[in-house]
Length: 465
Image (cartoon, rainbow, N blue to C red; front, side, top):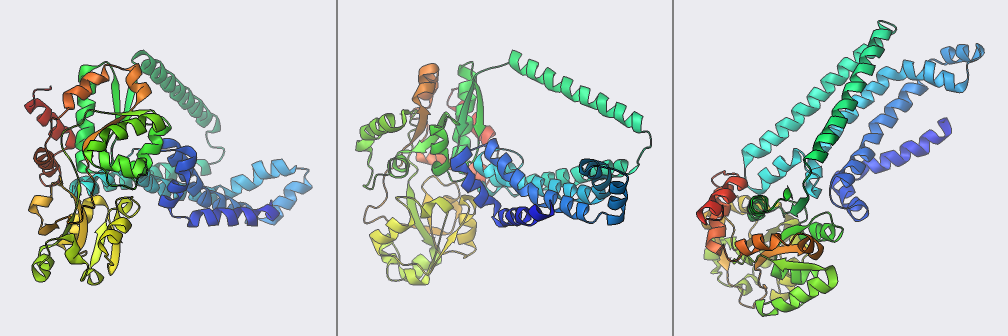
């Protein structure tokens, strides 16, 4: 095994140098959104400390002991199992402890691809400017890692007490195994008895999407016999949710018409709402999906600058930025730079050449511009922080931005199988204006309310629950 150790450790070292977020991105086309991709990525990262410590522990076993065992007629397998591994156990356990702590820490990133976990609290806290939620999620992950390390340290000490109460330990191990098996079987039986068909809803990492996702969940569970699972804040938004819809990982997600036209259908022309029928036909023909439950509000893009800059340079239109853009820093969420209606087309349309660009989480843009870290940014017209931030929205004088009416994209087979969902989509038609959506976003982002509570209160006010 000495000959193979170098290439194996070399490959593992190489894999370990790949940033975890990149690894998740590489795996999404292969294994899709969700737990499978997260497990594969975490397993790959767990290999380094495990393999390295196991290799180190085995090669440092005293050669004289190995020779003595060989001289007494032990086979290579017996030497490995009864000599090398027991003597290397302290080093191996150290690797296991490092691996567990590192893996638990990395699981926080898995929420970026819809795998859930405590990382959801961190990511959602950042998106909604909820510092308490972010800190809570971080502390819980840290505590879980410390608790796991403490448990493993007890296991390590117990393993070092050789031959002491060996039979008793085996009895406890057998008893524990039986209990675990019974719990698993009981859980499986119980879950089968209480089984309900589940509708999987995905939302983008935006405050209003969290609220809309909760509204759908509440209305579907109240008006149908279906269970609902909401995957909140899928990283990458449409670019990751749409492929997952095509792979049947998700059934429904809130989307915007302009985004569907440009990002999903890859159309280059400006979308207007008189093209809605073409949008519906294209979705049905290409993806076998439908648009339903149009909420009534439009969440369009707009370009905003710091108020002091607008006053200094008398900025009113986006065209006014052309002469001063080389002095300014542009900041936006990650996917804005890849959109058909994003950074490059915007700059080409208006002849803009910014000094620098910054990638930001969507929940940090307002904080960045208020702290003068960036000068220009795209905003949504329903942003809750828009009304309380020191910014000026510029007029789109060359009509670059398309229309962004909000509705739900649903897989056609799901709607055929569950026609009762049509009633829910009829209930949400036209229930929101831009002003109302901005107010709900503000309640979450600035008043610290939970999206679930905001959604519940709004539906009660509308008499829907």
